[in-house]
Length: 103
Image 1 (cartoon, rainbow, N blue to C red):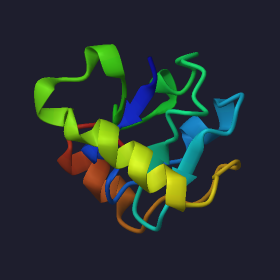
Image 2: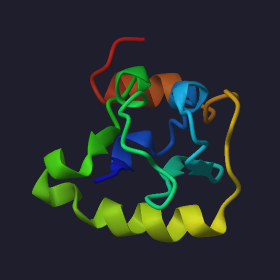
Image 3: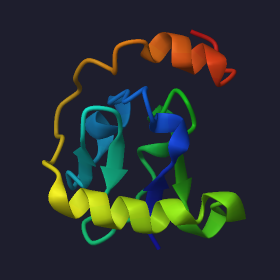
Image 4: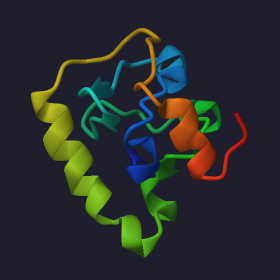
């Protein structure tokens, strides 16, 4: 099993999850983060840290989000590791509000 970052992270890229990851399995581009399934140790520490509930245990991934498993694997392999909390995507707080999460 592994954890999967899904579409709620797009245009948010909050990095609270990165700080608690013991194995540095998060990779990122300018708009979101991805989990490398080869590095993830399935600890789940990242899940409660995500302010937009974008991270799922793959065994609990809703069917409509299944494509994110392969997206994470593919994108993580070609992107740099993100090991420190950084600035979220510009407009992330507005996107968070649009997704129905309080700011």
